[in-house]
Image 1: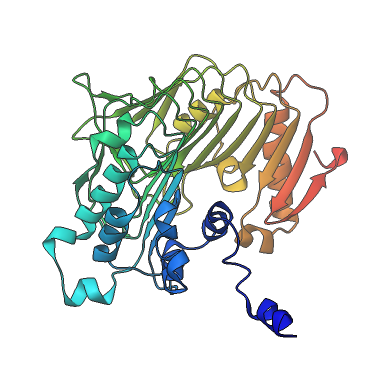
Image 2 (image 1 turned 120 degrees about the horizontal axis):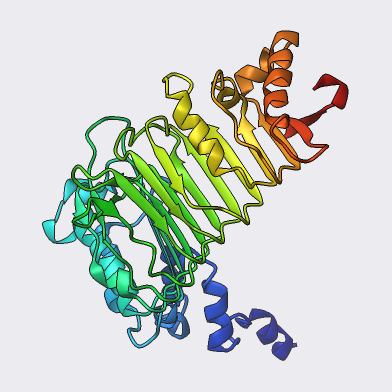
Amino acid sequence: MTGQKESENSDRLSDLPDHLLLHIIQFMITKHAIQTCILSKRWKDLWKSLTNLTLHHSRDGFHISNKFVSHILSDRDHSLPLHKLIYYYYHLISEDILHPDPAVSPETTLLEVMKYAASHNVQQLKIDVGQGLIKDLELPPSIFHCHSLTFLMLNFQHPDSHDYSKIIFPKSLNLPALKTLYLSFVTFTTSENGCAEPFSTCNMLSTLHIICCSLQDDAKTLCISNSNVSSLVVGDPCMHTRGFYKDVVFCTPKLTFLTIMGFLGCVSPSVSNLPFLEKANFDYGYRYNPFKESLLIDWLHLLANVKLMNISFRTLREIQHGIIPCFVRLKSLEIQMSCDESLIFHEMIRGEVRKKATCILQKCLHAKVDIILKSGSTSSKLEDDEV
């Protein structure tokens, strides 16, 4: 009986080998993983071998102060590389407000996190910063020379104002293993010719997102040049960077998936050819702001080789007199309706959809193209006798 009671009271979890315990706490928020050190001596230093770190500044109960972030990085086992580091900064912690320390400000803490990640051969780095919490900042060069990095996300949200801060992104990258890059609200450094071309040296890059970004000084041309990128999202859905650049040059011969979103009414595209384009999502302009129809037609020419096109109804409505390109490979056309448009989707609107769809079909070489109306998660097919 005594042996049975001892067995029932034993700590079976702590009996597991270190590598299994470490695997379990890898799935925890880093703050909670560190708190396991109070369980017993066995757990005291276990968290220091974590290869995945998730650091939160937010209102969701996972928040940590800037000073605590520094302690985590300094106490971790420096001999071990990092697999993944996620840094969320969405809320000022009371300790940082009541007892501000210039040595551990939001900017210095972010720089410390990024430098630490680079020096420990991080593979995946995600930086996500809330509106206006980080002001003008030049990102550390070391992270852009990290040969182990395969995934990089830099998201710096801005408040809805014209007081733009500048998060400086370098002229070029030395990231030979990078496959996925997400950028929002960064400022691209330009060359003497007034053009920014930061992506051409990333030979493994396949997925690229450029959202609400701008160019340094008075430069006007962004060159998206990469011989390997197959998936690209570009645009400004919230009009934050309206007019910050005038021309976008596409040198992406292997592109198969393209999303163009938001206010691009003043931006002109330039491209030699996109021969392998399979799918394009196209939501051009912003419903409260005018734009040139000629530029809209230029963007449509960019998509001339696409097989499946999802285009917003508000974009279609702007085509009045422009010459629509010949869509030589188009097989399916999806027309995306907004919630407001869906509510008023009576016969008059449906007739306008038919008219605009017919304009595109006249320029299509395929005898049959599916026309699909989409709103949220619902969709319906426009039958042949309706076109």
